[in-house]
Length: 182
Image 1: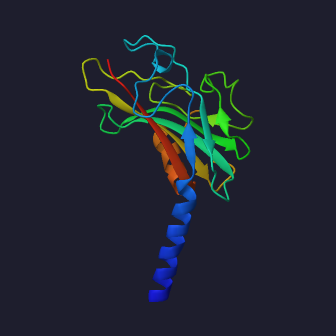
Image 2 (image 1 turned 45 degrees about the vertical axis):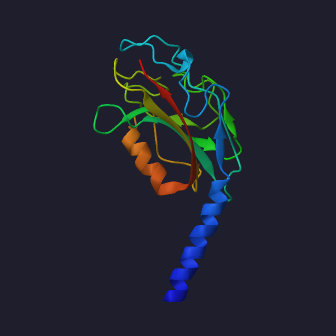
């Protein structure tokens, strides 16, 4: 039994080491810095471009069969955060999404990729729009390396459903967190 536990522990350390190199970057935002007006929602009292940022990832874990990207605000005053964007079924050969990939027309997404419904109520990217006068919120852009090529998600799937499916199929994640307040 001790050997099995030790073996599982060493396997977890090995898998963790592989996942540590997985990284995400963006030409449109920096970790810990405020989002640009391009990534701010247009509506709900906010004035912005509502454009999803460019994202690129590297050092993909072995066995990755697809990717997903999520944008989430854990500081939203909802009790459950706020899903700004979910996109799944990004083919394993893809290593970047251009700015604007989250447009509702899906024109800038790779073939087969599917956007779920954000908490603004539509499938696509919805920019930052925290309540006025609150401290800056964190916006977590996460790239998920998945062990499956396809998740059964469509454009009506909620962030909670997408999150459930992602956690069940994740090999590794990498995150870029920016902030925004007004």
